[in-house]
Length: 414
Image 1 (cartoon, one colour):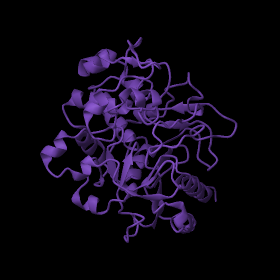
Image 2: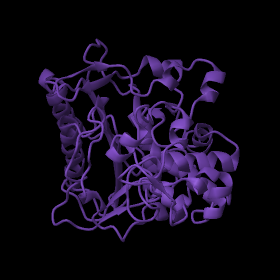
Image 3: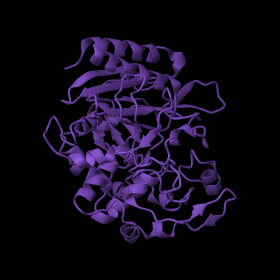
Image 4: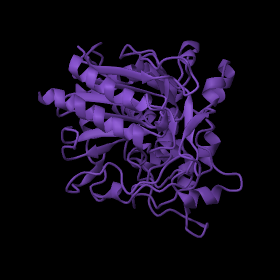
């Protein structure tokens, strides 16, 4: 049941940003749920676009970008439970994807060398396989030119032609690793990733509007994409969609030709996406339908730190190789006292309680168009804030994420 006090607090907070034209944030949606899958708060604010007359509402559909990674990881782990994939068998990975056996490592001078260690599914899910993103890695960006790389083109060939940027296992670097995990899964099962996500996650949870190929109704409710252009005034404006191909694909043949990106391919209503998080609050079981989408021990494994050897992995900073895609940041999710940081199977783990009131070992991650989700299994609450603003790291949206999440925890404490 919605908490009226939290609803009022969150609504006023969101409205303070969307109601101020100088922020350039047209609209926001914030949703939080408890272990029962019931909404603690569900607020929509502003318009679907700066040039739109349509109100932002809870039916609004967002491109959730890297929030897709959590869904892809669940699908991979379902295959692990079924014995179709192994987290630590590099030979299986190479049999399915011989490209990964041959892939080389890009050096600072632009040369390629052989890799020293083998790649596993666990490495792919924990971003230690060695792949990067062209909009974070200037080395990778420059190597791809003059043609360039575009991971938002919905074309598998953009993924297949990218070299590693690190030796496997040597460091954590955010990149196309989970896109590759999705490719491994597709080849192991003979099914498309979106179909696996629908059959294994979305349908058992009783959801409809979480998919890589939005229905006509979802497209009608699509939020507009916005951009703050580098070197400009800082104001945002409406722009063409960053991830267009699935939105213009009308025929089955066109859809079948598109890459099912486990790294960034899904569209969703936040009110539905959080029901996936609610299942994780209940050790893989939906509190609404009773469907068990992952075994409790698998969920526990997702939340285990996969990179204890890199306790400060997110304090190395976030560099921007393409400023239209992302802002630079000195670190991801600063915490008082600088406690050890962790990365589970597809998500950041904040080991210590956060400033908003979240519990220890909370999982969270984000989407490049400034969407953020969190899942606190200790305190039994999860949520998401959604916008469609580029580049990543928008201070107005991030400020609302912290403010609204804090309001939820303040209500729990009360």
